[in-house]
Image (tube, rainbow, N blue to C red):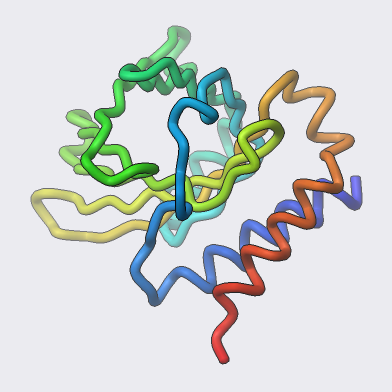
Length: 169
């Protein structure tokens, strides 16, 4: 359980470090290596409404990467809701629109070892109000049940390194 808390702590720290800065995708991102099914295991956001809903209704979100298609699947109201992400011209950056909320979302893979974990940053702007939201999500490959309780320590080292690179001087 302490490793799970460490991952959540790292996710929060990463979000705080990026909050005031521009988000960039991982350097030399390789979409081919990123292929596969990823499971969301942790999330942090600056939107209280989003976090309250996540806490009251935790769900397992999957990210299926089969270029050129990227499909996000999440349970919603007794069925599965699927969202298709569009590749952009920038490696590691994707785009999608949430019609229900009238929100444009830019998604970035900010850190991944391609085998065990991926951290994504989602930056959205509500079209009508221009409210901005930032969300950081931690994904793992493999069964979410087995990995959440025993996350690979190599992943922790990679996340620590990422945080160190963005720490203000």
